[in-house]
Image (tube, rainbow, N blue to C red; front, side, top):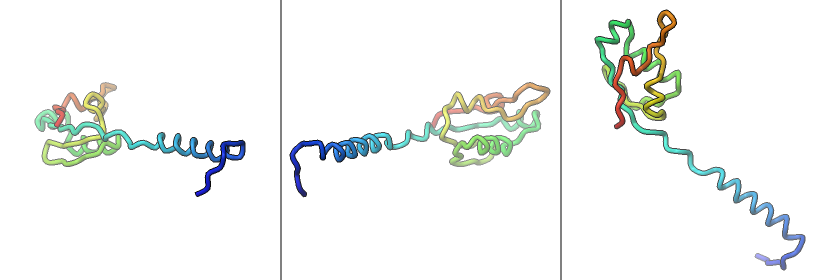
Length: 109
């Protein structure tokens, strides 16, 4: 490796190196996927509204929310904040939205 005295011909290399370091810094690791949340739906209430757990799972997938597991009337997800998840609209009836928070308990794991 050769070292050159500081001069005009080295500024191009220094600029390239500086831009490379800035690019590397901007490629930091992505943020963590968010908290793990448990959704516990009330089967009786779902039935009264003619909804199913499949409806909830379908809406989660449409919103690109990662489903870690689903069993019966429970599901575990991540990739979304609890408040945003509670505002997920499952269906609209007569212009009134039915939110996930209306039919399920959402708990951090």
